[in-house]
Image (cartoon, rainbow, N blue to C red; front, side, top):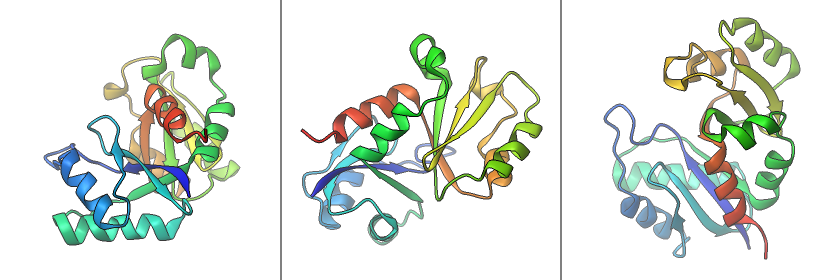
Length: 179
């Protein structure tokens, strides 16, 4: 068994509420009784054999069956999160302004040509770079006012995703690291 980070998409946004106690209950019912939630934004750490599409589907089904919430799930094990941290192309922003550096966990690998398409759509100071199963996005100004939205990213990359700021990524990498 290895430690796996679980990331839910679009939780506690636009009226979609999920109590972390309910999330823990769903994870326990899915066979992960020692689940720990991290920050009240749909993150958890569980022990699992693999961080794969089957695990994502199992948790998604549990959320739907138990809570009636259709929510996409993204999982990464400790090694994958460590690789994402190590590959960060924006080290100065990670050090100086980590809340404006975002990792978008993707349902697949971003293609170089699609990242170039995305770069062509950026109208502000934002920058993006591909990573292992993710996209790094730098928002030097307010994220909430940026035109580089999740919808723009997903259309250009042709992949679904969920974003977390750098502080959360570091915390999840720390919690999933093998002893």
